[in-house]
Every structure is written in C-alpha cells, then in structure tokens.
Length: 632
Image (cartoon, rainbow, N blue to C red; front, side, top):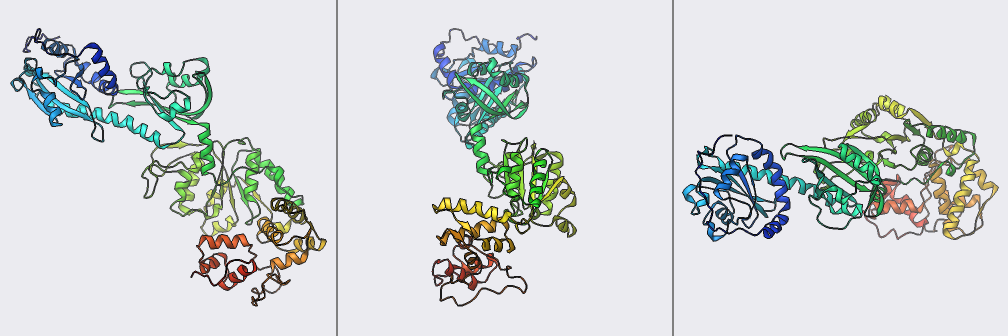
C-alpha cells in the first residue's frame, strides 16, 4: 500500500468539536436504519473493495449528523487523521460553513474544498454533497464524496449526485414493492437481503404480517429466523429460502407464533447488480383470498355432478356415459349442441368427476366480450396495458384456472386472431399477460362448447381447423330435448317440484294429454325453454294439475282467453306445416330486455327479434306497465 506522505495532514486532536454521545448516535442510526442499509449495499462494493480508489463516501442524517464513513484503508486512515468520524454534527457552529451545512440550507448539490471551509478538519480535502430524497421530495439524508486535495480526483460533485441517485432508486424499488402490496387485499410481499449470507428482511408488508399472524411492527432488516422459526414445522418454507428455489403457487404449512396456517407462496431469487444486493422475494396469498378471487372472477360455480343430470332415454344415457368416460381423462373436450341443452352442466359434471375436482372451475362466455377485451379477460393484463386498465393490472381466467378447468362457452364466437393465440397457449401451456413480458406457465384442462356447427365454420374460414382438433381431442354432442322422449316429462316433473317449493305452492301433476303435447312440441329453446314455460304457467295458475289447455294458452298468447280483451291483434301466424314455430318469451325475458335498454321498447323488441306491436301484446298479457309510457 502506498504511504500517506502525499496527503496534507491536519491533526484535530483537542480541537473540541462536538460529537453526539454514543447513545444519541445509536438512536439516530436506528431512525435512519433504511438509509444506512441501502447506502451500505451500494457504497461497500463501490469504495471499499478497490484498494487504488482515491475517494470515500460519508452518509448523513437529515440533521447533518455523520452516520457512516466508507473507503479503502488509505482513505479511512486519511479521514481518521483529519478527525472525520461518525457522530459529528456538521451543522453545529464549531464546524463553520461546510459542504453539508451549505447543502442542507440550499437543498441542492454543493462542491467545496480547502480554504472554502473555515474549520481545519476540511482543509485537506475536496468534498461534494448531494441530498437523498424520496420521490415526493421528502429528505432522507445526504451523501458526501470526500477525496484528499492532492489525489487528483476532481469530479466529486458528479460522483456524489450519481451515487445519491442510486440510493434513491433503491428506496423507490423497495417502496414500489410495498405499494404494489397495498393494492392487493389478501396478498402480502416479503423480500430478503441475503448478500452477507444472512436472511435480513428488506420488505415485509402489512398484509404479509397479517397472513402470518404476527404483531404489527417494523421488521426492517430483522433476521428472518427471529420472525419465522427455522423449525421442522416450517421445513418446506425454509427449504425454499435456503436453496433459493423458484416456486409458483405452492401451498405451504406454517407454524408462526403458536398459530398454524396453510398459505400459498410464489418465490423467486433476485440479483440486483445495480444495488449489489441479492436475495429472495415472496408473494404470499391466504387461501381465503384465492377462494375470493375465484368466486369474483368466475362466471359460474361448480354446482352440478353427474347425479344431477336427469334423463334415461337411450340417446341421452349414451351421452352421459360418454361424458363419464371423458371425466377420467385429462384431455381437452369439445361439447356441441343446441342452445339450452345443458352444455354448462355437462362441463361442471365432467370437472367434478375428474382428478381436478376441488380445483378451480372458471367459465368464460366468449360471446359476452368484445374483440378488444376478450384477450385481457383470458390472459389478464399489466398496469397501464391499455386505456381504462386498472392501475394494479388484472389476473386472467387462464391464471385463475391453473390446475383446474377452463370452460370456454360459445367458442365459435371467438375472433380468428385470438384463436391463433389460444392455439399457441394450448400447445405451450404458457402465455404472457397483455402488456407484460413475464412468461406464465399453467396447467389447465379446457372444456369448450358451441351451439354452432364448427365444421361448417371451418369451411367458411370462421374457425381454425387446427384449433378445432386441439380442442376436440374428445367430442360429445348433447341431444336436443325433442329427441329425448319421456325425458321431457321427467324434467317437467322435477322443475315443477322445484318451482312449487320455491313459490310455497302445493305439488302439481301433469294430465296425460299435457304429457303428449309436450312430447310433440319441438322445444327450440330446449331444457331452458321448458323450465321457463313451467315457471310462467305455475306463476299464474293455482290448480293441482297442469292441463294441455294451460300449456297451449301460455304458448300461443290467448286462445283460451289469456290476452286482455283490448288486444285484438293475434300473434304472427306460424309457417305452414309447423304449428310450433313461434318463439315463446316469458315475462322474465321481456323484463330483462326492457331493463337492458332502459325502457326503450323499440330496442328491446329488436333484441328479442319481434316487432314493437308484438312486444306490447306480450306486456299486456303479463299485466306489465302501460304501453303509453313508451321510450323511443
């Protein structure tokens, strides 16, 4: 090591400059704990490890008290000989005008050297000060770059500003993690600094503390072992910590503070070269939050199993048996059939009968979203991905369905460009959120459904043939109600029992002629139409027997006097040879259409596929509001 002879030495023994007491310095350092840790992570490798470096660094609290000094052996020896030591308050009168007092007063970077100082301890050096601030302008402290005047280091101001900005960036980085955590109810964040072969807590959000069942206090830079015991009960968690494992959504049993809990953890190691820190970051979810997410974002809940599917006709029994066989596999499934046949119920039953039972079942109606929004619904999006996006981003249906089943209803309505994306996700079992770069790996079984003839759409170039085969590894066509014979009466009796029970009415029976009529009727709306018709009939009749006349009158608007006398206009005639072709609407459907268009009867009628005059007749039949109160 070179001798110190070329330095100017100013011995300050006996100068009498004030230093805070050891107890005071300890209190100040405790208050500035984050500043000391973050600054140290940058300054230690920057100015200590290089033996030839000719400058050092000093870290100050906002009141001008020197907290720490950094430098190689030669620089530290020069500072000691000059009398520069932690605990000195450079704002005190005895220190005169100096780089810190001027910098704090001006709230700006300052460079001073030699005779510009009045206090002898500064005359042998060249100093530059830069404030260290939070993004909102709050002062955290200050950084001084110090170099002997004869060292040849001239750009001390540039060095001070650059290093101070790096320290500020470190505050911003860890502060941003905490801010992210504050947006997500039920989600916690933990970050560790393992740079010195210890597990020091850099970030432990309030939600993470709550999930672990710990007391609310400041855990910054505490040893993790003192907070979460390194015990056999926590072995899985500590294996992740010690081995720097990357895990995704792993359920871990924990015992902390005498309390046991099962939590969901995602973990990844980090290596910040800019900050000279490495360690682990954790995202921690309570299982309660995961349940809430699934309930919030799922369009349906899993309520049905095969035992809930009613039907004994040979064609329907064969469909049930085929679906049961499908549930034993993990292949993708394509369900086809007319609207209202119960494709969603079959999808739920297959999920419940599979090895994924108990895992998420997420339903998406592909026809319910615009072309612009369906991608973000399926894959989620990052913050600021598009105009109107939520600040915190959003999780997509694929991610929510991980390890479970994703039910894509009305798959035939999916835009062609998104079909290509879906095909790639199925093949690679991974995707990126809209506006994101991180590749997210998933394990999802897809059950798709369509009431369209997809093979016909392929011929019209409306559906990708390769996607059709990917989705239809296993295929099942659910027969329409008109082909199921006596199943119609079985379903009618079941629905009538449920409806009467809900309305607190006595049970009803079906006359033989009613059963015959129901077998002949085409039920273009299938099981959904049957249930709606029965609900309408039972709502306005109190008899114990459902007659053919009740059913006929309800379906054909007043042949038995159901329409008010003032409505002389008859419903549109049915095409020749087809007495059942007119579409039936129940009161609930009409009310929904009117509500959707805020009472605009012209638009409601158009959405139902009928004229405004026909809508009036339906409204009169149900005793709904006066048609004079119209909205055009």
